[in-house]
Image (cartoon, rainbow, N blue to C red; front, side, top):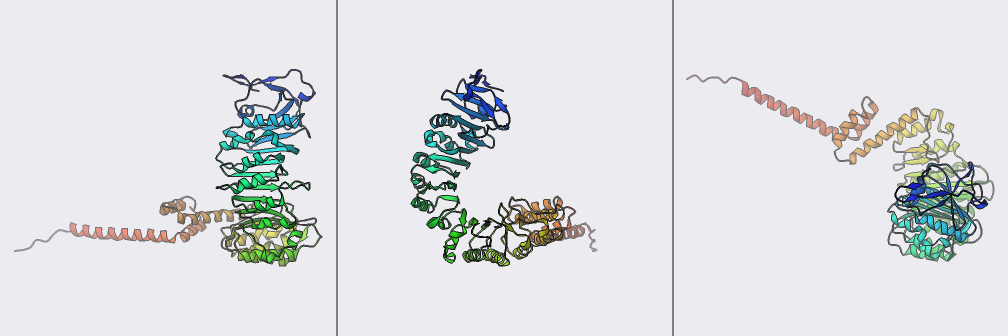
Amino acid sequence: MSHETSELGPLLEVIPYCNYEQFARWRCGGESPTYQLLRAPLNLGELNAEDDCLAIWRDNSTLTYVTPYGVTGFPSFGIIDLSLEFTPYGPKLYIVGRTEKAIAETAAFFLSLAGQREADLDLVIASRSSFDFRLVGSQGLNYLYATTSSRNLTLRYLTLSAEQSIFLATRPHPMQVTVQFCNFEDQGTAFVDALASRKTSFGSLAYRLPYHDDKPFADDIMRRLLQVDTIKELNLSCLQDELALLPFSARVEYLDYEIDTSSLLEADLQCLEIVTKKLSLSIYHDFDENFPTELLGGFFQRVATLGHFVELKVAIHGRVDFDIPHCFVRGIIRAAHANHSLRLLDLCDEDEDLDWDPHVKTLLHQRKDHKELQTLRLNGSKGAFGPDFSHLQQFLSHKRNVTVTDGKGRIHTNYSSVDKLYALNRFYRGSAKLAKVPGRPILLVNALMNSAWNDFQRIALLLTNHSDVVHDFVQKVLLEEDHESINSSQSTENNEPKRRRLV
């Protein structure tokens, strides 16, 4: 283990005799030596360069477990009070201590060591319960100003001050912030005020409610949040009562929202305002074992009426596995057809509560005439796609611009003929893109000589997609032949011996 920088001297020193608090207990690795700092690290990179897990004891009676990048190690169950995880290439720090004040002091110390390299990493700050992160202060996050990239910041089970809220909302570059089960000391007033005053996009905000009944945001503050137009992407868990339908009116590019069917039942769906063009909706149905056919049919009818969606994901969750009625599938098909610009249709749910197998053939057949569709996601068994995936092959032969995947983005395939068809379709899409690229004739020749060589289908696709270039080639060749013919005739005439005139 390397603890020394040549110019500054040693960084760490082993504590020879540890008391009970100073012992480091790792989940799978037993115990390890505990160190104390001989000097302040230059940055977190010094700790991240270590070869193994280590623990650092500070004078404020806190013990910090350090797991460098590339090393596997996690403290024993239940002993973490606050964690700082820089991912994917940074260290993970797990802090335990006697008091929240001491733990916050240590967290602020390590956060102050974060520099440009850490600013380009994702960061998760989390506790086991509601840790008073106000004690850390906003200066602990100053390093976030060092980056121009949009990274992920996740805050979990923390209580945030108004000053920290303003700091997060006013960072100059777009962020991807996830606030999970956190509380705001002012119920979110400062955070929303700062968001509303931004002149540029905030980026992405994911907001997950605590499990208890306390509301981190007051109702009026939540209403204001949903009216802010500086958020690009918004991810919300279920809101209740009069707030439940308001997220649909949020002025965001992308909305990911969870809602109960009880809230939808109270709505006039045909007047429901949905502003976003990219909607991901998780619908939870816990009333009974019957599929909410009429309710969801009304929702998709509204989607069809609006007709402005480019991405649509709908997942339905229940206490039991549902059989999907044919009329519901027809409603989805009508809604997709009515949204002419729809590029993504996602019908997957992680729990796979819905059995799509009986409807895969219908969905594929009815989607083949949608011009803009690029991705279709649905869960289905191998048999649902027909003998040797015949339904899928027929669909892909007709829709060369579409990829069919499961919910995890894995393509449905038989690993032989379907893979070849996908490869041909990728070639087709690449061929179509050539039409917009400068220097197309040269690129076309290269494609014919390399990617399409000895493949009749690919040659045919190229020549069909670029018949105008082929026509120009032919015209040029004909002109050159005519020119050569004229030159040849003139040369012949010039070379013929001239007759002498007889006087």
